Image 1 (cartoon, helix red, strand yellow):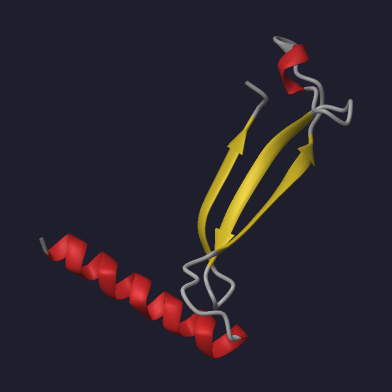
Image 2 (cartoon, helix red, strand yellow; image 1 turned 90 degrees about the vertical axis):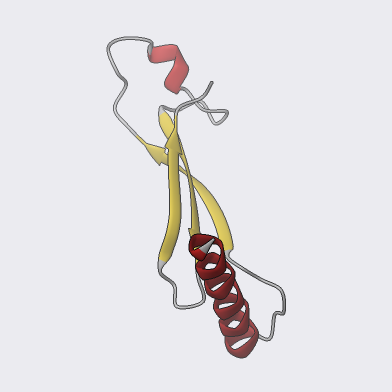
Length: 78
């Protein structure tokens, strides 16, 4: 139960920070994504070609109001 209570406190603090910093209430994170260029791999090369026709890994990141990363995911095309 302590973990849930701590998580709720962190979310409330994050929402307060976003509201104070940017005037946006009820925000718990800022999300953005990008395609990261990579060299063509030797195996399963076709799985790494993005919709823009170059080899890439899809990256998504979430930041808090202090611009610290709270989550980052990198994946090839599925």
